[in-house]
Each structure stands twice: as C-alpha cells, then as structure tokens.
Image (cartoon, rainbow, N blue to C red; front, side):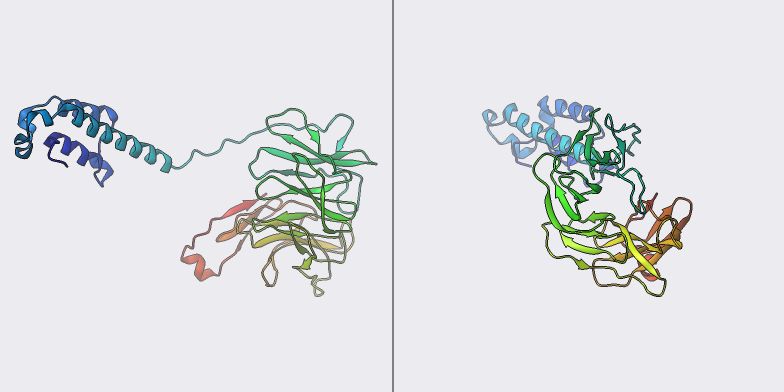
Length: 336
C-alpha cells in the first residue's frame, strides 16, 4: 500500500484480495464496519512512515478513494462468484398449440408419413414451426411461444418436414421437389437443390445440411446451406436389403448424426427399421437400435454414449472403451 494509507486500510484491502475465499469478507456489512473503523483516523493505526508526512497531506478524502476502490473490488468478486454458480434447472413448460382455423396439422397423406404432425422447435425454444393445411393444400406456420395466434410463412406453400438452422434464424423445408430455406421474419424462399420427395433434414453449425432427397432407393446427402450440388454421405446396405435412409438428426458435435434405415415398402415395412449413426466425415455407419419405429424423431447427446428411450431402451458408446474410461470431455444425453 502507499505510505498515506493506514495499517487498518492495508489490512482491509489485503482481506478483499485474499486468495482463499474463506479468508475474504463474507458480507458487505463486515466490510463496511471495518471501513468505518479505518476512516475514524485513530493515530495508533497510522504507520511510522505516514507520521512523518505533513498533516495536510494525510486527508480523509484520499482514504475514502481507496476505501471506495476496495468496496468496488469486493462487489465485483461477489458478482463473479454468483455467475460461476451452477444455473438453476430449467422448469418444464407445457402448452397447447391448436391448428389454425380451418386447417389441421400435417398435410396430404403420402407414403410413410400419413398426416402425422410435422413440428420443429427453434434451438432457443422460443418459436415453433409446423405444417398445417387441408387434404389439398398445406404450408408452414410459425408460432412464438409467447403469442397465442400462429401466422403463415409466405413462400412455403406445399412445404413439408421443416427444420431450423442452428442460430434459429432460418427454416429449411421441402416443397415442389426442392430443398428450400426461408427467413420466417420475411423474404422469399430460396432453392438449395433438388429433392424429389424429401424425408427430413438437419442443419449443423458449419452450415452443412444433411437430408433425405426421396422416399425410396436412396441414402442421405449433404449440401451447403448456401446451395450447391449435393453429395452422398450414406449408402444403402445391400446385405440387409435397405431401401431408404431418412430422418437425419445432427448430434451436438455437429459431425455425427442419427438416421433411420428402412427396408421394404411401407406400410408396414418388410422389416423393422434400424436407427444408425454416421458422420459427415468418411466413415462407416453403425447401428444404434434395431426394431426402431419407421417414423420418429431422434434426439441425443454426443459424448460417452447415446441413450435412446421409447418402446425400447439402449445405450451406444461413441468413443472407444479405453477413451470412455479416461472420462473424456463429452457429455451424455438422451433421445425420446
């Protein structure tokens, strides 16, 4: 401390800066009490060096500035400590979304989907996009969680199987034999590539979209979110007689994804579908669950294992056993 500061104030600042949290002030009241004591100007607390300084230079305003700095440092430390605390668990939110007047969820019945509701929640949980219409026409609708009435998204007529961009600003969907994207805030839809009968898509943080371009005789493809020529990321397995890959869903690492591998025509298919895991990097797909539903939404965490629950329950390691034993840095998640 500077010579002008009394020993008492030196001790107060040292307490504020103590490395061990237990040695610091535990409340602002304790700090204020000591600051008032230091400001009382008790001569017995002034160091010999300060005693040699002319009285007009040992003014209380100087002590007040240092005391204010000490109080600011303590306040900052308390705020930082609060920020580091684990956040409170999120409370579940339950609500009902009714279809817009004169419509019903889903669209015209097509192979493998029927009129099942097609819904996607934005990454931040604030918006829900869904398909609604009649047996002759449909389009995408969006409803913010805090708003009662949904609104139609222009340019999404005949849209199906919507999915969100990672930042929640753009929606991907299928319409008119194309994979498209649209800004729900307004603006025309943009064509990304051909998709004769799209069956689901997923968008990662590197702006790669993995999608199913058709409902039979094809694997999954990838394309840039800016558009371009699609390239295959999965191939049908002739050993199992697979006829289609569909419903991709990226895992949190943005490289691996889940998808459903179907065999035979629908419905029901000749064999139970299989949920597989693959990567946009060159690799061989691996089965996660046999006997999976033909149509479903797969969600999972990317870490030591994937847990899938529903009419079945299973776990599948994403890392080699030796790596899992070391703990790694990933997390685990579940799919429902």
